[in-house]
Length: 420
Image (cartoon, rainbow, N blue to C red; front, side, top):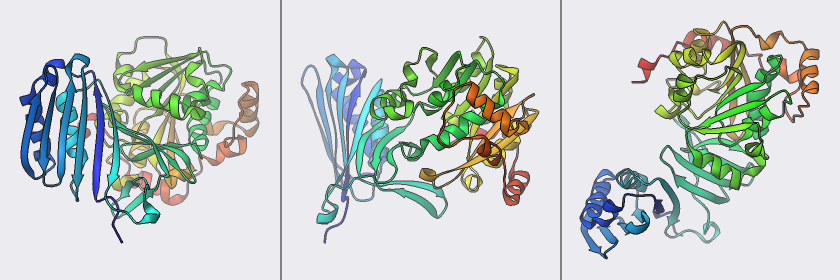
């Protein structure tokens, strides 16, 4: 019987590269050699050929090969990274991408080698390392798209149970099976807590689910969605349109492609009634800086006095084992800035855990609403849901004693200097 994935093969298309670099066959060869060294691959020999315009460069390695073929007149290059054994081809790929600096990159990974007949064609698994010694393993039935952008790696897959799942850097972000649980818990408790939300800011949320839920409230006049990576929105609109359900085309929606923190710090317009923070896990500089005391202080300045902020707040039970920024620290950091802070939670099947959220305000307390008030606001605004309801509203804010104890004992205020 054979073994699965004897090799991993990355095939990429680069667009918008510098023509002078693509014409420099010697430089291309140097880039491939640097990539091989970074990935600790065994270099056997290298070769290059100049076509005028364009070039092909190849590095033969003990594990297989690396190659680049270019069309300088179009700013286009194809990249081929094939590695057998245990070495990671993505290490070499990222060096090549960093050196060629494409404005857009599309990349797919193909498993190569001999497989048992029953496993032929099975796509590679995605492994999410939750805490030391514990992983979630997702087994896709099909890959719809794989690519690496300037900001992150994107995988969109089909799954036997969860339908379509969007991954960013191997972390599940949303699935068509249960995305409505996550998005309704993130959006509606905060929106309902505000008596008349007209202007809403969403940071992140490139899949469009949070935007869809916000726009269900008829009182909303304008929503600004800020996402750093336009490719997430482009892919979501094209391949998982059932999540946004046309929200990106709503005339009340404005899309801004920039860093969320920069947008908040530089914003000088009319303040917002509600802010929804739907960003990725704080494992890198992309999102971590949206969970610090300094960020919340800046955010407080763009929200009205009676405004409401709600952020995704990581795994309730396990995040403190993995991240410096965790559920307990998010709660404590928000408490250092806002007068009213109310954490909440919901079980999200595709995450395999209970996910935390946190609402903050200077004046509004979502737990003070009666069942009748929640029901009336949903009805008046024409909001229809699948998960959230008046009974669930108050249940979301109830925590067992051990979680409350973790917040008090493990929670601390996270500042910008802690990220250095």
